[in-house]
Length: 324
Image (cartoon, rainbow, N blue to C red; front, side, top):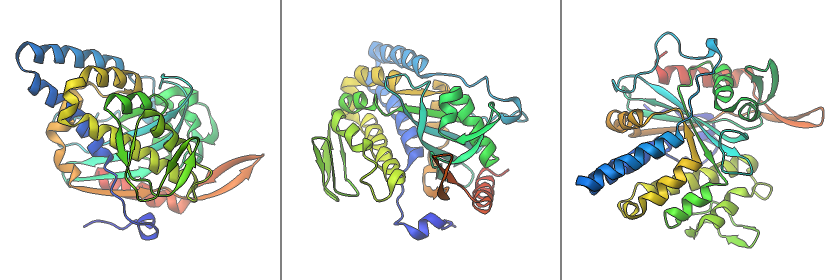
């Protein structure tokens, strides 16, 4: 039975399948291996290994109390529920190791219930930054201590294990969009950003520069940062769908090259393969939720304060989904 969350009651239901983004990325890897065949297949495998080496960035320096010490998640078995912290990093270069995580979503995947849940976390959420002993906006954790501090801070806020992370640099997503030949997105509202015009409900083909402009706008969106996060998810999903297409096989080197710069993760290539092999069924049912609160000014700085009852609601839902 699918639960109806508070955000689903107030907004039209949208199933933005972030779990499928991860699975389709792996599907692309498998497709080009099969399509290559013989010597070419081995060459592709070598290129894939090189790319995953570039993408891999461990999170071993996490706080001891904050990591899953008792029983590490085992995706090879295909039985463990797990979580992935998806972050869109805001900085001026290609490097995704530093910068604020202006988009944060916690994805939970449960193979036993064949269900995936996506929780959006407001970037201005006022909470403890684990490892610094202070309270601040949750999106500052990544800037202070990279992925490890962001994972620990989200885990501390929600009281559930955060097993993996996937960080994407929105600036370098421009390269990814161009590498896949552009993407088509349907804007949820009409607006102008720079030299580009976007029309509500009208499918729009975008190259990398136009896609970046599409994600940059925030002040003209009646939903503020929530609206911007939706448009960022549209761009990421569109890019990954294109990556997963058979047509992308012909220019896989360009795509892999941009992925090495665009993404960082603590998932190994073998774990990505396990996700595709063992967790495809979990994409059958997708549920979205939004951690929500109210804005306030403290010492001249805007924060989003999440009520205790809202945090408890989300914690209980996540624990039920993770069977803990």
